[in-house]
Length: 403
Image 1 (cartoon, rainbow, N blue to C red):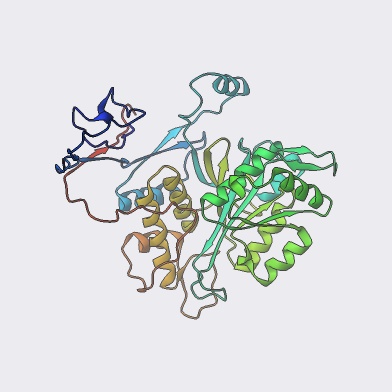
Image 2: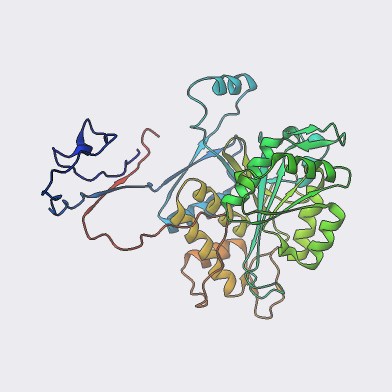
């Protein structure tokens, strides 16, 4: 439902009330008569659309592991959110082509939620493995508050993007696969929308000049406005990552080089647990986990991965309050020195707990330090009203029926 902005009531003899449109010229006011100073009528109630409390996500043919399902149910109860996993049937090439050609495009597709499904960055090498989900580009997120770690203030907040091999075509200049212009533009636009201004594009020495040429030919479209873009070879990029892992907010790396950057970031940050990985076709199409050595495997329960993946899915669905509550709840637990296996820390006060215990600590309302958790750029900020409304408001709560 779309609420149109309110229009002020106009007098019947007003020149702006002719056929509901404004005339080309305003009629002259007779001499000696001023415009009436009557007070304008008070605007009517404000109409706003409030998203419902139902989050619908897709489920593959594989059933949800038991430990993941228990943790997901616990988070849903804590959020007072109805999380529905509905089966998603794979779409054949013929059906996909018919959906694109029809007037009712596949806008009703449900994103697949499977953070327990591990995908290795090595799988993107050599043209990509056949089991990879269908997408044009992927984005993984390394987000760390930095509590008790030898990092700069604010921790790490990096978006690691790569085009899939299917979105790369052989360039005539370098004779090697390069990202298509539309895929490159979409990735830069995604970084800009999340407020990530420092972007690195990592290629090998063979394709560096070709990438620079493509960016120069493209000019400065909207996706590149306010972006500081560096094009580096893999050797130069690794040297910078060793010195300071948070040098860039977003990194675009070719699929063949993704495993090297992933391994370097994991080693530098000390976070060796899987990252949440978003798959994008035309829009957000699914979420999985990305791990270096667990290709096409079912991961055991990983609490930070589940919390971050669910926060990303909720943010993509427009449920910003739920996404922020998940992110801030995990940040408070980490700030108290409570960690899980795979997210080590050098602080002496750290207490390592199981993933199930981490979920219980988070949902139990543990009191963290008074300092405000660092924001996560991947989550859309919650918009708050500048001043409370002095008049009554009408709110419509969207609901999903027929399921």
